[in-house]
Image (cartoon, rainbow, N blue to C red):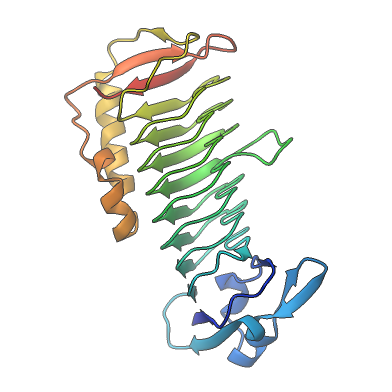
Length: 284
C-alpha cells in the first residue's frame, strides 16, 4: 500500500480527465511511473508529471491519493472509484465520483456538475457547493444514484437526485429547481430551501426539508400518521451519516444530526400525478 500526493503545478488552459487517478490504480506504482500516466485532454493527452508534482509514501497502511491545489479544470475525479480513499484538497471539476462503487471521495472545496452522477456505492463528501445533476442520471439515462452516501455541505444545483433509485443524499444549503425529480427510491435531505418544482414526478422515496418551502406542490396531499417509530430510526440513521462525514462538511450538515426524534414532521404524499407513494417530510 502507498499514499500518493499530487500537487498541482499550474492550471492548464484546457480540461483534463482525471478518472485514472484512483488509489487502486496508483498504489503499486513508483513516482516515475505515476508521472508517466497519461490523462485524456480533449483530442490530446498529457502526462501526470506535466500537471502535478508527484510524491509517494510507501509506508502507508492503506491505499490513498491526495490531490493538493485548485483543480476546477480536472473532470472525472473518483470516477468508478471502488476502494481506498481519494481526497481533493481544493476544488474539482465535473463528474466527480461518476459511477463510483466504493471507497471514500472527499472534496474540500467546490465540485462541478454531475457530482455523484449514477453513483452506486461508497461515500462522497463535498465541503463546498456543487452544480447540477448531483446524484442524478446522465441526460437520457434511466437511473440516477443507486447506492452509497453523498453529502454536499453547501448548495446544490438543479435536478438534485434526478431518477435516484437508492442511497442517501444530504445537502446543507439550498437546492436548485426540480430537486428529487422522478426519484423511485432513496432519501434526499435539504437543510436550506428547494427551488421550483421539487418532487416532480416522484414515485417513491423520501424528501426531507428542514425549512418550510415557498409552496407545496398541488400534486402532494397532506396525510400520514403513526410513523413515530420510523421517524426515530430515521433520525438516528441521519445522525450516524453526519457523524461519518469529513469534519468541515459535518459542521454544515449538523442540523440533520440534531433532529428531535420526538417531534414528528409534517408529512405529505405524492407525486399523485404519477404513482403517489413518495413522501415529503417537512420539519416545522
